[in-house]
Length: 165
Image (cartoon, rainbow, N blue to C red):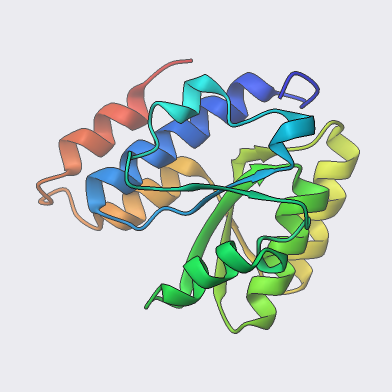
């Protein structure tokens, strides 16, 4: 994470997304790219990952290249996958393309994803969008999950949306 441009924002938004997903009971799958060499999930996020969610290590850039992750994704009854992470132009992009090829609808949360350079990030976002992957933001996704101000979770989502870094 120290090498990721705007890392503080990426971590902050990913944490908001995790909290919101837990609030709505949305299934969470977490991967780490070669944690022995690159390090594990940052502590700021680790504490928001539910204890029953395994954090699965991988060496393939795409989550679909790791059998344990592929199996976790295959278990999901939904066709829509909300995706975020680092690095946008490598692991996130290859995962998005492979998930799209599996027939999944992908929503990439741009402010909860990042790369070491803005150029790598921007080109990856453009490539993914042109391939049919939807781009969104943390706040938009949270309110999509909420659907109405009458939701019992509206106050939680509203609180998260108003948080300042």
